[in-house]
Image (cartoon, rainbow, N blue to C red; front, side, top):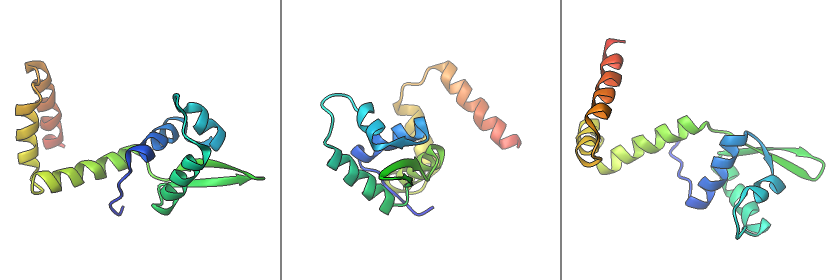
Amino acid sequence: MKEIKLTDSEEVIMEMLWEKEKLFMKEILESYPEPKPASTTVATLLKRMQNKDLVGYKLYGNSREYFPKVAKSEYFKEEMTSMIDRFFNSSVTQFASFFTSNTKLSQKQLKELREIIDKEIKE
């Protein structure tokens, strides 16, 4: 998957689509909290997301039913990889060191993390 980056506004829409799997424009607008954006704003965002190949649609008469073309887990994986590349010189070890020393994890959480890593090593 090529590197893609959602803007904050696009991410709001993608979260809706990942949760519901498919939505019409009207449903997207209804899902927004107040103050709701203009329908033209949402249409522009959806068009940009289509150009990034993140969103597709099915046409029903004059209405478009939008759906995500990338899974949330795949997008998140790409975002994490990009972040590690940019901020930690592609070093997962530097990332893990920063993460464990700066997030104030409890002993229980650290043990759970170690169990996850140990499981991955054994497989």
